[in-house]
Length: 123
Image (cartoon, rainbow, N blue to C red; front, top):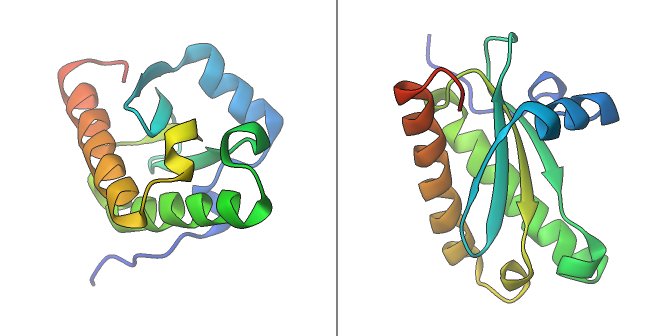
């Protein structure tokens, strides 16, 4: 049976305690457009949390555009990722960047997370 490329609620971090746990125990990485914090989880699947601040992305239209790009990229790469909780934070340059550039940036970050988990017990 092929793997489904959906993003159900169980693959998203939504509670403050989940975000706090990732920030407290996670390892940080990033680039010019996004910061990412990752920590291993016991859920058996990768889970995503989003942090796109008003001061970084401005109005709701821009914030939601950035969120859509992040969620779509995660949806397509979720099966290649190890069982980690991820919080992706947008940085100011993401506001003006075209979607293709943001997707390329995220593609590289997903690969970094997978590589770090393969070489170390803590992402």
